[in-house]
Image 1: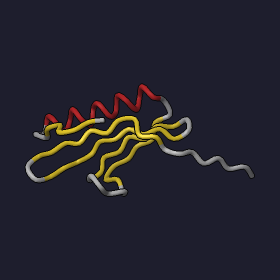
Image 2: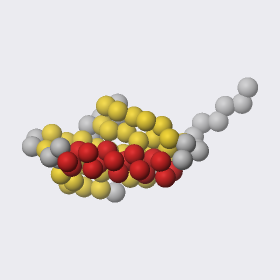
Image 3: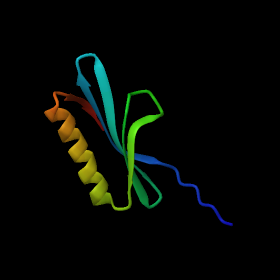
Amino acid sequence: MNRTFYTSHQLLNWVLERGQQSLAVQLSRAGTHYQVSVSLPGRKRSLYAESCERGPNALRLHAELVSGFRDAGWRSVAYR
């Protein structure tokens, strides 16, 4: 059996803050799949993660998550 292992490449990383709390909303690509995740900055384990097969769907999900957090009072403090 052949197994292919892909290195994940981070495409977007937005850091949001509300009070003393911080969250990172990230978009990464590994091989042909994309992953959108929400995590605490500096932590490897995600609070939420969803895999998408198409880039436009992953970008849309990332934008919807960031928008939802902003609507809930979070503000963007950094992005890459």
